[in-house]
Amino acid sequence: MSSSKIITTSPAFASGASAMEAESPVSIRLALIAKPFLFVRHGETFHNRARIIAGSQDVVLTPKGRQQAIDAGTLLCDWQGDIVVSSSQIRARQTATLALPGHRVTPLNGLRERCWGTLEQGPIIHPMPYLNPPEDAEPWDDFVVRIAESLNGVLAHYDNPVVFAHSGVFRAIRYLTLGTHDGPSAVNARPMQVIPPDDEHSEWQLVALTQAE
Image (cartoon, rainbow, N blue to C red; front, top):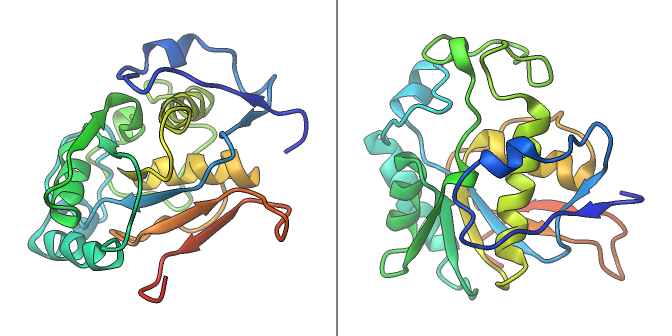
């Protein structure tokens, strides 16, 4: 992204309040600090299974989702980084503790899933109104700023963190790195490498972590 503005906050950032008051990305270009990290969407929930929007609601993993989290741990067994962070919502925290037992998990409210207002508890819509949600939902601009602040607060202080969060958070990451929200939802409990530009690649890369890596 050209003419980018990097937003940083303390790693203790635990509220969306300051994000809601931040300048809208309609008028600025946001960017993540150019450091690599791993992203893992939570395992399957009962809402995922039923194709129902959970959003800001706290829901738990299914037995399949718990196993997915454990399986993700096999891909993360060689992970070496400074910190494990997660959304403060229970589905993300469950996934983090099952995938990386023995590691301290730092929950951040700023990584919570987007609030979808009246759409929550209803069926998933195709396509989802990411840019034009209901009036009582969290606006896309505010959501992206909140995620940028939370992630940059971590990246400013830690190397190679692993982040456990939600499909909406990954969509915001895609926007912050690739400049578009379009694309498939993150797969449940599949670790993704978020890699900044380097000498070989001029753009950010979002690449699934494999056993060989």
